[in-house]
Figure 1 (tube, rainbow, N blue to C red):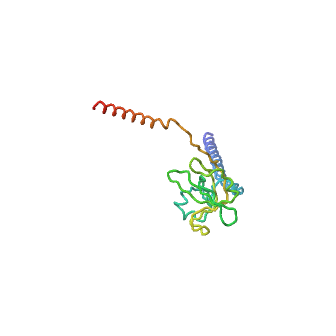
Figure 2: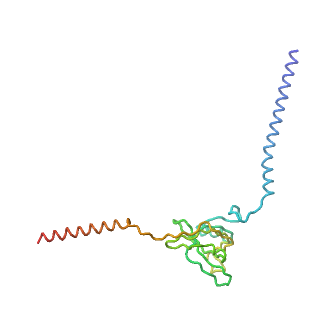
Figure 3: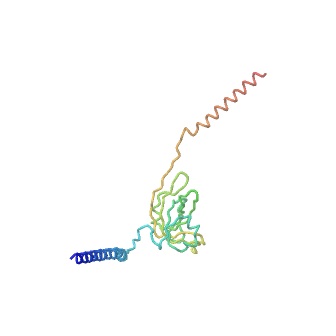
Length: 206
């Protein structure tokens, strides 16, 4: 009787182990199936949004400095850059209404600029052009970069297809600050005092 109970106990333990193994195998297969299903769903909904910022291999979201440091890499490719509009708006002579603007980087340590060809509608977004006392409009430009544009005297430029304003321009009027003149006034007073002492000493020596 005891031997039969021992055998039935061992059989019961083996059954529980097999059941546990089967449950673990099913759970492992389910975990592996989740990424496959997610990829399939992602592929079905892969719709390109033309208004979103560059996050794919077709648009190079880069900087103006990089356009010159790696010009051959970006040549004839769609790029997207951000910079301050400076200088003036220069109209083209081809009767299209297009115009040229200069876009400069915000990095003062390594400032670079690029000529950008805009349509009249895109250029009308610019409210200020950077110069002394004025910060120009910060513009995000997307278009085709040319290392040596064959249409425009072989110069580097961007033919913009899209542009958007990231920040409006700001005026910085000069303000009178009396504190800036204090060091000069002190120096003048000290100089006059020394002249007086020198004149008094010379008169006493006579």
